[in-house]
Length: 202
Image (cartoon, rainbow, N blue to C red; front, side):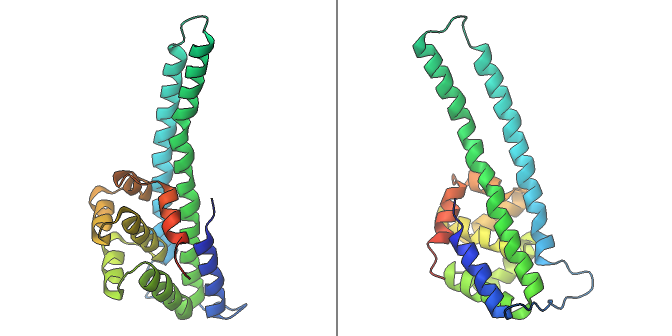
């Protein structure tokens, strides 16, 4: 899977901060970085994937128990198809970790790049690209305790699901869901989210 938009934004962030120079953001004592706000979401995704792996193992055990002695060619082919089909959702969901790794990279770029990088990411990616407003970014960031990477994911999910961003951030906070859980709730896959991001003209 390709992550063209995130790569382009990171490159532009480097330029906006000045090649070879990063200036640290000034924060109040004890204030979390954008990375710190979003890193726990990767742990939620990891735990959700572990549950999927456990479910997959149970499914495979059941498939194995369903074998009735010697198999016909048709039965063997049907069993092999069940085995392959059972793992496909997990294979796709694993890419959510890759997407979140890129989102955390954006967070770090903001944390280390200072105001120029933050302004570029906020104005170009979130406001111009994903249709956010400055007021809503502040609101949803506080509501769900998210950094810019998490806000990007929330807005991309909303755009893919064709719903108001407020619905997505409410899904996340009210149900304590991982981003993977929010995608599942909205009947989306990670490919839908990557598709939204790669369509942006940045």
